[in-house]
Length: 89
Image (cartoon, rainbow, N blue to C red; front, side, top):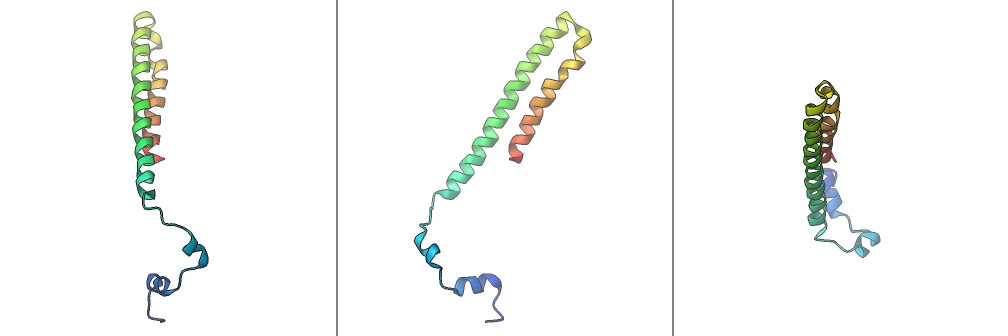
């Protein structure tokens, strides 16, 4: 048995009592991928909403006080950061 690789050795061992008592959840990968999908979708929806709302604010501010436009870019950058950070999670 020394010539067997580690996965083959693990396959030849008898299962432990704990492993025998634990049922196999066949839908677990589905729910894992659905969670990742929801995180991706909702983070990008939130980033798009934040970008839109801050764009409206920048446009409104640009009419009244054009000198403050560059200071109001921060919310757009933060909303973009949320959109980028969502897929990382």
